[in-house]
Length: 290
Ligand code: UTP
Image 1 (cartoon, rainbow, N blue to C red):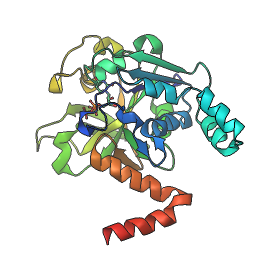
Image 2: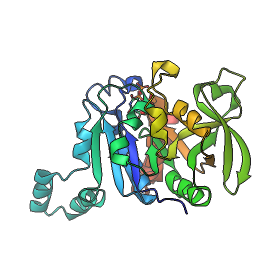
Image 3: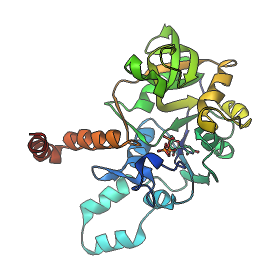
């Protein structure tokens, strides 16, 4: 019997330097794709996968994320007074139930591994999910829900992976894949940003994880890795010596909204996918690209 995954961590404490000046005063997770902030897509994906407790690891200047997932009393009162029932319903539809969110601070941006470690007291002794809040993963069934299916079969630790052109593997965390079981592969190796031509495969780690709580033993060493940051991949490599790791090949498209191109592409893809916008938007885009 595998233990149910009830909690998810959203590490939102990064500085978003690749998106300056937009991210000087606004967290990158609050940049909008069509009409909602990026973080809302990620929380919705977690909800769809059955997550019950949403843990945000925040930093300075990130309070607005907390406000987004709270009731906006004055706004709702004004909408009620103006009989704007559709808008009121929309606001209610994504409000997490009372007591199902937690916010903790990463006091300095020491790396993704350190951010996840900051959630250890809230997670306790149970397996949990991590969702990188700048990667929007668009698919019929959400990425985390796809991983949950695999997890129920395999247990252990699960990482979502996807294939890229071999010429760009040096920019990513890469896994080596072995035994196949249904939709999953056993992971034989993991390497962060391998020098060109040395990658064990072209499967990249794409921003969704299901991890066992023993990962915190390794994260608590606070060892610095690539870029002088405490890396989640390094702790996972250590945990691989003790527990099984499986890769789920993500069936969908990923948009890295932490980059300008990924962000623009996400807006086009989600704009075109919205019934009420698609026809007009298509005409606008056709006009723009000639
Ligand atoms: P990134 O490296 O993509 O985000 O980290 P960043 O540091 O915000 O962006 P750039 O490189 O400066 O443009 C992946 C995720 O991990 C979080 C980030 O918020 C992002 O969602 N993160 C990263 C933390 O929460 N804390 C950290 O110390 C580092």
